[in-house]
Length: 398
Image (tube, rainbow, N blue to C red):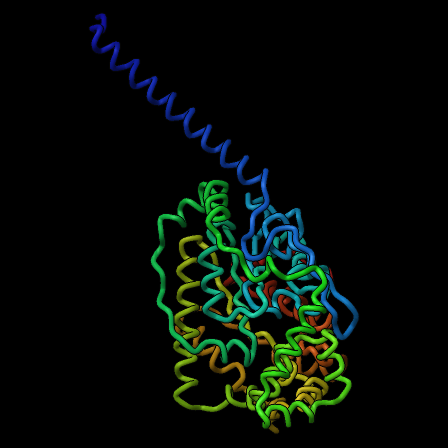
């Protein structure tokens, strides 16, 4: 039986529509790949930027890749074989004070061999910014595991206002399926960041900031400043030491003792941390990723040498700093409240600090040895935890 002309037209129209739809999707996919691969992007920092900083162990250099991360140029949005890990945190995750190859996320990538470890650390960031970074970046990466590095003391001090979980937006779907278009759109409308104005050589900027800090001192703060060793004050005024360190030391001597006190502020900090971790958990859930909350060790709580230099800078030091568990209790409680696993390496750092220096003397961040030790601890932990679905990772190279 022959089809009627109208029926033939219907079949032809359906076939034509299917072909046109397929061609359209293919064209969109090709255009998206071109947009993704033929231009630089700025996920956190300006793309392909170089910054040189002075430091305790000589100058150290930061290079950002085509995506605006402190990662190798070989990292691509399109996922390859193996496990992809995203490390979110502040300057201790970023690798402040050491060269690119000595930051612990890259050392961890080398140790795990078949894993990619993306460095999403941002100096100066706190827990709320960690959630912001997760919500703005993770949907592109298809991460299998998200590290959230909570720095002892600093991140507790910075988490003082609560935030609320953000529902999955339509843009999250767009990020996963059309990263080229969404990255290009964000790049066009993105406001200039602080990091775009940072010069390649930071010393003149720090010198000007140091003068501004000194000019802002009250009489009591100036008295605190005059007690700091002359060697340190000379480095500070020459632009060879991060001005923020001296600013905090002179204006908030109780900075490291306040976070260990049990009071309503501590409860509010715990709620703030729980909220931000819930936001990160929501991002992980829609990406089918695991989350691991880590306590990043600070020298004043783990090293006698680091404790002594903090005291010389004017910070109050408690007798129980090298033995207390309180430094991790708040973070552990917040992680539990958010339903996320938690790990701390405080005891391991206290023990290893008796053998070698793990922190920069005056700056206070992890030195090369500290970054390497932390990467080894994380690698060993991951390889021992089948519940994180990482039991098939190859043995550590170290």
